[in-house]
Length: 79
Image (cartoon, rainbow, N blue to C red):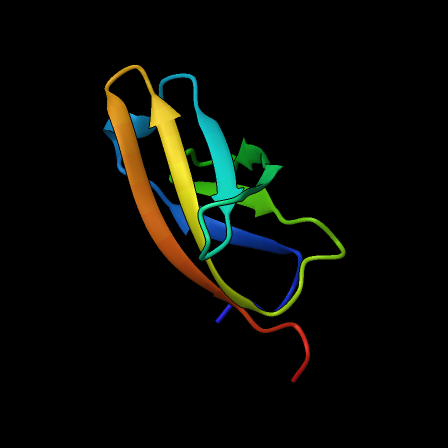
């Protein structure tokens, strides 16, 4: 689970064209457009979640010129 509002995600190299990352809840509602930046090595991407995001299951949609990739994430800030 993700336990803070920032986390790293490994993305395939082919996704490193201009990216657009969105966060959706289980009902398919758009929660946020995510801020992100690549680390210095270019192998990981640092994503920043909204500070007021509640614990739960969400989906990231990562858009680029080649298509869309969806990833399920579990947010559990309150341990």
